Length: 221
Image (cartoon, rainbow, N blue to C red):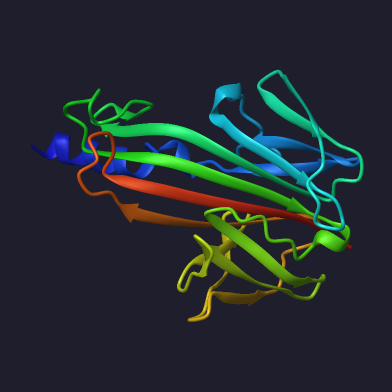
């Protein structure tokens, strides 16, 4: 019994689902690359997980863009685009005694718990720094400087209170009752903020929880 108890603790600490990884947009000379992983680490992903890609110019008008997928990464280009938004569906994940598997609880009958993981990545620059893309979970900036970042988090278009704002998986702050936050970024250059929300799914045959994850990339000088 003791051995199995230790095994359970080990799995809960070290067997993390795909939700522990971020999808975020890295700006590159007027284009953007969708990265999967932490900091500068990038893991390969399948093109079919990307469900939608949109780009807008400084006037808020959507613009045509080009997509290319190479070596497990999606690259985006488009003239005049200063705001990008990508929706990713990372599918169903089930926690088993062997760890996390990319399978639904219908496929894993003995799953301890199952999740459906959806990610929303956004990158803003120029006059579009405060742009609202309309993502189900979204970080919206009101200002950004080396001394302070201010903004809010929207969940399905409404202010979301009590959500943690992170940079490189380190807590910067928490949204207040009006969904707003204010924090000092840890450094300048490319700054990636993140937040997440987990919701219980009722009568869903494939997952117990819906995991929503949002990232926002902004360059601070």
